[in-house]
Image 1 (cartoon, rainbow, N blue to C red):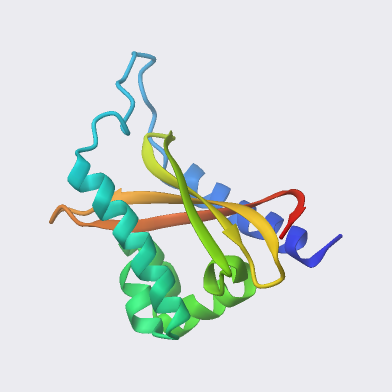
Image 2: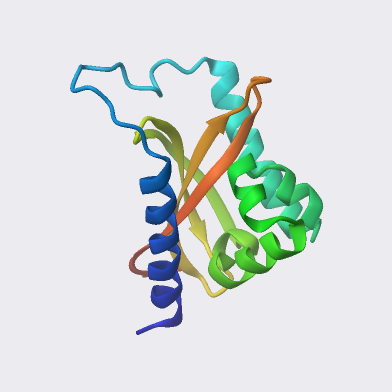
Length: 155
């Protein structure tokens, strides 16, 4: 199994464990898509949060990159050095992307999720799904990032 696949599967298991422990039961009622309810300001803020974290990774500013993670993620890792070490191991395409293209904003499990197409340092192409969480002060933080390879594509 390729290294990225093993890493991806490991990260998927972590994500699923977090998602299952933090999900809430929802009554089977039609609920408006959370993305449709976002203001233009929220859409811009979500994009800026992701762009800022990627820029912080590129600048090797671990503390700044860590500041864009949701409180649950910050509590899980405890400090910026442990967080960045995990990102380097499991998320190299977003830690050192060659190219980033923002795609659609989705509603996944009731959370606004920004999809990006990312070209990693080895020219492999991925979809990166950034699940976002709005804070009490109105700011947006990243609560999860899922990387999925886009087949055998590379540039």
